[in-house]
Image (cartoon, helix red, strand yellow):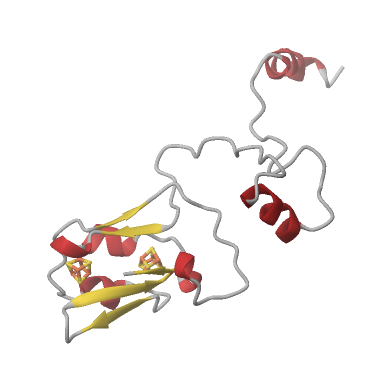
Length: 134
Ligand code: SF4
Ligand code: SF4
């Protein structure tokens, strides 16, 4: 009898799109690295992830041309992920350290920082091009 209140929700869920999908492949490959290599070589197909929800906080983007080098973003970053390079008045973001709090995007007076929908960031090398934004 306790299940009765849940019944309408159960019926609703039956007709809803799933919130997740079989990403990155229908069956778990022996190694993810090898699978991604095969995808790059056109030998395997990646099942794309479900779209990111609104206001998702993914990899940071940086408009270098509009930056004035004020350093406010580096000051507020709780993870010390932003390095100010005084000589050129620009910044470098170490994405591997970022905790996606978005405080830097809120404080930037020139709106040159924003959070993208990119979230596939796993990498064995924290210095890889994918994890450094400048
Ligand atoms: S999102 Fe947060 S942790 Fe990431 S760089 Fe900006 S302030 Fe730092
Ligand atoms: S707060 Fe904005 S303008 Fe200032 S250094 Fe950071 S990115 Fe550049």
